[in-house]
Every structure is written in structure tokens, then in C-alpha cells.
Length: 156
Image 1 (tube, rainbow, N blue to C red):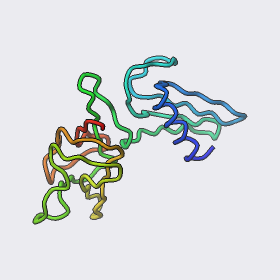
Image 2 (image 1 turned 60 degrees about the horizontal axis):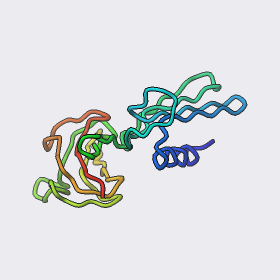
Image 3 (image 1 turned 180 degrees about the horizontal axis):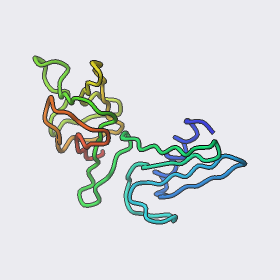
């Protein structure tokens, strides 16, 4: 099973509101669980992202917590866009330029929403869904941690 297959399973989980997925095949085992899942049952809770998967059989377990998969707030239907890395957060491409986005800005899939500088490299962070920015949660030029919420977005 490759990464493309895992992403396809994740998409199916999101579309069908499945909170847990587990598959075992010979010496390969994978378990997917969406954030907020408390047991191995189908749940209609929310559209949160995958929080972990485990691959067993190759002498070690691997856990992955991708920041790119957003978490939904049930109360407001807003999704947090989280930092995929540790670094310094920038709202604009340069000090003289305007911000990539503002509160109320509509973004589409793959719109650049900010930069994160890590080890002297500027990394463009892109939206993974279409929506309207409702909150900016980090101040410009401040350090961010992996998984730290950067923005809140209302999906369209």
C-alpha cells in the first residue's frame, strides 16, 4: 500500500463520516482514526482530520499527525488551518507587500495563505479547501509550532 492509497482511504473516510478504519493484510497492518473518535465505530460527529495511523509488521510503528488535515469546530462550523511545521509565521511575502489574506478573504484550494520560514527557507502554506477566512490566530513574524492553529476558515 502506498501513500496514494492511504490518501484515497482518508478521502472516503471524510466523505462517509467514518471515524475509524483498520486493515490487515499478511504482515501489513494500517489503522486510521479521525480526531474526536472515541471508539471503533462509524460516527457522525464532525469533519476533523486524521490524527494518526500505525503501520505494523516492519519491526516498528509509525505515527503521523498531518497538520494539513483540518479540524472542525462543531459549534461554529469553522475549520482550523494548522501549521505543518515549526518556524516563523509571516502573513506577507515581504515587509513592504500586503498580506496574502485578511479576515473575510475568500480562498480556494491551493491559494497561498502565509509563509513559514524554517531553516532560512520560506515555505508557502496553501489552503487545502475553499472557504472564507474568519480569524487570524497568529501574529506576524511570531514563531509557530507544528500543528498550531494559524487561521480559522468557514468552508464554502
